[in-house]
Each structure stands twice: as structure tokens, then as C-alpha cells.
Length: 257
Length: 332
Image 1 (cartoon, rainbow over the protein chains, first blue to last red):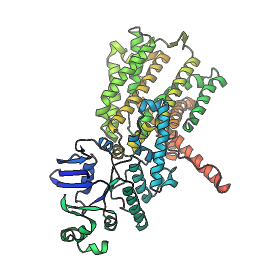
Image 2: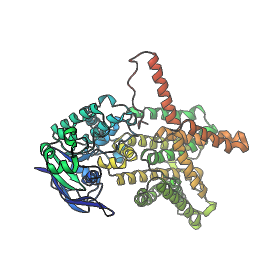
Image 3: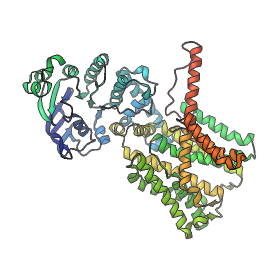
Image 4: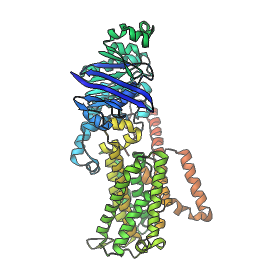
């Protein structure tokens, strides 16, 4: 069954088309990757899926609810979480607090309850801390718990962003270039982490330039170029698709895998 | 709760001071002003230090509270308590109505808009003379009384204002170390990521703006009753800047820092009077030196300095001494 259904999606910026008439479906429980050259519209697509941009046309249905027209925090309420291509950490907070922010939607206390420290809020605080520690543990970040976020190296921050997104207990996780800037060892760890996320029953939508990683973790791949669909299929199908080889991957395919 | 340890210390210090130094000018007179400034700085710090939304018009809300209480008690014969409440309601309405359009702006633009807001409030206070007394101000404001206990001496005002300050500090600390406080800091760190974590950033900004304005309004009412006289000068743009300086000087995003900034900026001019005409120059030089050597602010700077010293000590004493360090962020 499709968890996410995108139909007739278009978006342009001042006459420049970023996405045009794009259709695809993400099946529940899979790792679904979107690839394409720089400027193909991948990040624009992600921003529409998460409610940051409003598409000019088309619909995005997530578990039969419309995403178009919702603000990002309302999209998050549906069970969508994401990471960002250029890190969007809360550098003014500790590692633990960063991930606790991820628990925002799983807790309820309002400004006044918190201000007066009513009993319910204390219980919630303990619960949020537990969830945050769980998410950090899941991403192998236990030892950084008490540090400030701005004291961490880049590779760790990439995982911290994932931990924060997972703390929201999402149904769908959008990952925007999780391996960008990582070295080989870190990329390997990232690959395992994506697999574990998928094994935990979370559907993953991945945008990534590292073809080795994409081919290895993906169940299905969508190739876009100039904002429209070039091909879609399993990793093997994509690797053998002549249009993809010619238009995008070129002779690099052998080398990249 | 562990984050309240500093608060207990503050409470003890604030309540012991008048016992140790009874009838001391620096405790019961300057101290009251410092506590009042601390209330304002702590509220502004919620908005500016934690949520990252600068305001150069905070004195305006302070003024609305002061004038609401002054006008209602002197011209309409209200009891001081409902007058405080009326000031809070009025401030709440104004702050709520302005929050959305103003807080859509960011950075310099937000600074300019709030600056304008503060100036407009000040002009209204000056121009509506038949109500506010215009530039001459408004006198004869009655004092507060609590079940027959008249707040009519310096010491009594010290008790009232310090207790309100402690209450405000307690509320602020609770907020910061909670889900709502994390939402504020997240919004400061990355607005788009905060939204993506399900935080309604517009509502959060509006909430903290209104809350900070309400606290300032309460401080304004207390100020009016304590002084028994108000004039627009006390709520000018310069005072807004002074409040921002207190927050920055003590250390942004630190409640204790805001208190420290308020205390220093209140006491420093008092202590510098011995330099007579050089007073202002020396005052300025001290501020500059503090910002050059402790750019994160006095409190935060000293805190991290102490932590570094502590770390060196434990290294000297050998491995595995002491607890793992708690993160300093947000705890205060």
C-alpha cells in the first residue's frame, strides 16, 4: 500500500520550473530514493513534501490526508519528519535537548503548565528524556549526550539530526543527503543506520548523491531530471535503464557501484 | 529540581540582605530598583536571549502598566489591585494584536519595528496630556496595601518587589527547562527545523512576546505605586536600550545573567558618582571592556571560566574524579 502519493506536482520560481507534473508513490515500509543531477529539483520536492513550499499544482497525499496547504508543523503532526541538506541543528542547545525537541509532538504541556511546574509536566519531562535517550542510543550517540551541539564534529551532527527526527516517532522520514560530506567509514555507518531505521518500520524517503549508498539501501529509486520523472524502479532496473545511463549516470555507473 | 538550586541561593541572598544590612541605602533603595530592573531584564531575556527575537521597545510595555495603574487610581479612584489587573489586560491585548505583524520580521527589521513601537507608546504618553499629565507626569499615586499591611517604607517595598522578582525568576526557570522553553530555544536555533519538529513557530513567538509584555506591565504598575509618581522619561527609548544592555551584559539566554546585568547596570552609576563629571565616561569604558573580554556576557563568561578551572583541577587530581559535567546550556 502506498504511504505517500504524489500526483501532478509542479512548482516554478519566477518562470524557472523546478518540478513539473511529477507523479510517484512511496510504498509503506520501503527505502525509496530520489536521485538526479544537481538542480534537478530534489530539495524543492522535499520542501513541498514537508510543507515549507506550497506547490503550484498537484497533490501530495500522505496516508490519505492532503499535505498541500498545511504548514510544516501541521505536516509533522501527520507523522512526517525530516533532516536537512545543510544542517539545521539547534546549536544553542545541548545534544539531549536537541533530541528532546524532537519529542515536541509526543508531549503536550503548554506554557502555563510548564511555568507553574504542574505535576503532569514533570511526568512528561521524564518521558521526553527517556524517548530522547532512546533515539540517541538508536543512532549510536550515547556518549555525546551531555555535550553542547556546537561542540560536535560534522559527521556526528548528521546523525544527531536523524536522532532528533526519530524522536518524533515518524511514519515517514525524509532524509536530505544524509551522507553528504561524510568520509567512507561514516558513510558505511550511515548506510547501516538507514537500514536499521527501515527495519524499525519507518518508511524512508532518501535524497542522496552517493550512488553506492543509494544502490545498496534502496528498495526503489526515482530518477528525476529537470523536475520531471526520468525513470523509476528497483536499483538493478535503474542501473540497467539506458535512459538513466545516458542522461544522468553516463559511463560512471560501473565505477560508482 | 536541579536547575532550581541557583534559585534557592538567590532567594536566600535576596531575603538575607535586608536582615544583615537594615536601612542600608544600597539595599533598600538601590536594591529595589535593581530588583525591578531584574524583573524587566528576565522577561526581555525570555524573548531576546532564548527565543532570539530582539525588542527595542520593552520599556513601552513597562510604561503601559505604570500609566494604567497611575491613571486608574488617581483619576478614577480605583483600588490599586484591580488597576494592576487592568494594566495587564490592556498590555495583553496590545501585545497580542501587534505580535503577529511585528514578529514576522527578522533581525534588523524586527529591531526597527519594536523600536518604533516603543517610541509610539512614549509619544502617546506625552501627547495625551489630559489623561497622563503629559511631559510633567502624574503624581499622587496611592501605595499598595495587602490586607491592611501598607507598603509604605523602603524595606516593605524591598520585600514586595523582591518577592515578585523571585516569582518571575521561578516562572522563567520553569519555562526554560520545559517543553515550551525548548520550543523557544529551538526557534532561535533554526526556525525551519523547529517547524519541522511540530512547533508552531508563529504561536510560540506570539506567546513569548505577550508573556514578556505582561511581566513588564506588572513591573510598571509596581514602579508607579512605589514611586507614587510617573513621567514619560522613565519609559523612553533609552530605557529600552538599557534593558537590552542588561541582557547582553549579563549573558544572553541566561536568566541569572539577566539578573546580574540588571544589578550591575543599576549599581554601577551609583558607585561611580565619586568620579563626578567623569562618571559617564568611566561607565562607558567599563561596559566596553566587559564586552571585549567577556563577549558571551558576564555571567555566562564567568561560568565557563569556572568550569574550565574545575576541569583543570580534576585533571591534576587524576582521572575519574568528579561527576561527568552537566551541560551548561539552558540550565540557567
